[in-house]
Length: 132
Image (cartoon, rainbow, N blue to C red; front, side):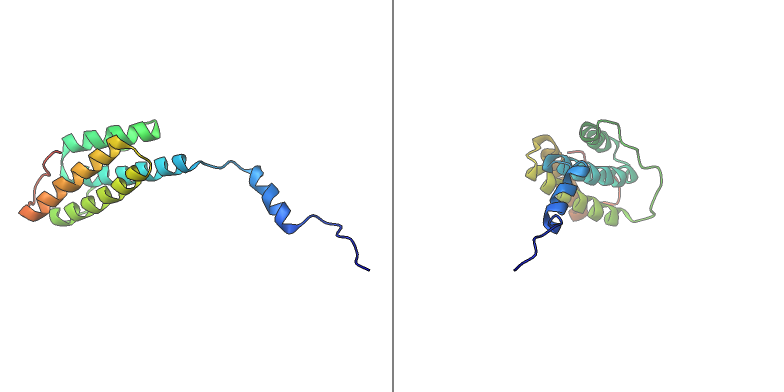
């Protein structure tokens, strides 16, 4: 009455294809995200001229990536207030990812940077950020 199925199911073939390429774990994905957010924060921190905070951030990026980060060499021409706002947002993103992967060191660093940039914005600071 019915003809038997002679080919593999499309769903089964899709399942088989997943074994054909490597997958990253959730922890590896979070490490990559956190390193990216911290590297972006490092670029803004370098542009602000805060070398002490830059070194702390660079150490965390190196720990996550296994290699020292490339340091920001160019200037965007943004005002110090804009850079503080951008750095605050980047530190907030890093804090969220660090908290989700339970990375205490990175979370403390990110929270400290958020505090420093909040203080700089409140004070109308147009120079360097205070170290955490």
